[in-house]
Image: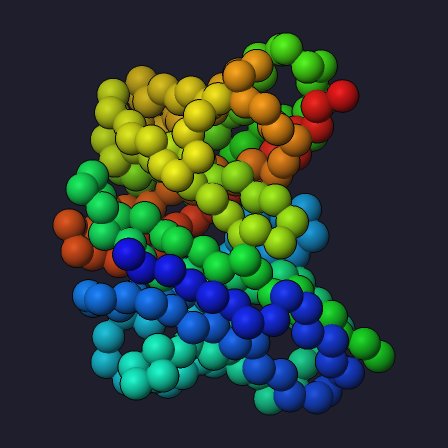
Length: 115
Length: 116
């Protein structure tokens, strides 16, 4: 069954520094991957998605992710973070089920941007 | 603007009481979902529904119930049988893109339930 592992529970970084949030997945069939962001006490917002095609996916707020099939990874990157990027980030993969698909989420990575 | 509305945003409950969380969407989405979020555990699927009058159990359905009488509404009841109901509950919806399609979920702002 498809699953997702986010390797870091928290990532502290200084403002304007680059950041990488790591995500590994396990899947035996077609892979559809997502990154969502959650600001405190809010719902989740889609950052970007990989469905097919180019392995480098660009999303909102200057984030991008690279699908690496050989390493089964989908790491999220941003070259220069802002204080406003402080949030929790979730990697997710589609699981195909008998009655439709569902998203399976990783445990989340809290990004703390310091000034 | 189209979106998902969850209410109430904060809810307090005494042990032994049932509570119902509301979820309404005006996106004309076919599928709706309820997730539970606990710190450090990500989101876990409680129930989902692909069509009106039909719903399926997710990974942690015990102690919860749902209904889907209208396309736009998918209320979740947290029953007294749920042993640890304090959590943040998120409702989501999506277009169903076929059996192997990729569903992009739109989320509501969440409801935080605290059992006293």
